[in-house]
Structures are given as C-alpha cells and as structure tokens.
Image 1 (cartoon, rainbow, N blue to C red):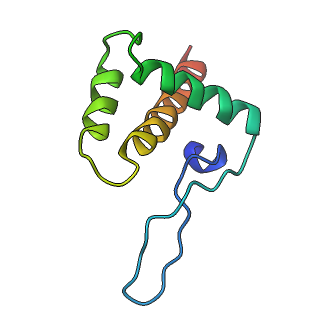
Image 2: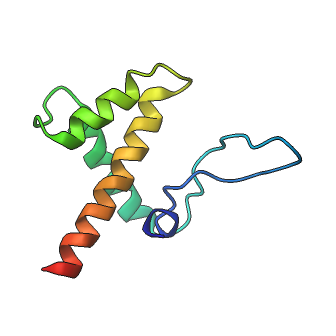
Length: 91
C-alpha cells in the first residue's frame, strides 16, 4: 500500500496473543515523508483550514490515548498521501 511504501504504517511485532502498536516503519523516501508530516501538522494546527480531513484528524487526537496528537498527525499524513496519489492517477 501507499502508506507502507512511504513508511507511514505502524510496525508489526506479533507474538502469540500479543499485537502491540509500534512506531511507524520509516521506510521509503525521508524527504517526502517529512513534507507530508509537516503538511499534516499544519492542517491540524491553529491556522489549518476547516476541512473534513482536519475535523477527522482532530477527532483522532481528541481520543486521548497515548501520543494521540502524534498518531493523528501520522494518520492525516497517510490520508493526505493517498488523496494526492488518487488525484495524480485520475487527473
């Protein structure tokens, strides 16, 4: 998938019944991932435009789990990458 290619997917380490959520894999192009994460931080920040993507990301961050804001930024970055890829393929 595109998220895995860009290193925006969580690392897996399954053992028996354990399936912990680990850090992102950081595979792929560092610069592209950095730009996507920076864009996601802007979207979720105080000056970001009011869009469905922003509302979705803020709802993820409001869940209040461990590192919720960071997880929301990576999720928005991945969704932004998929959206940009879809626009590139269809246009």
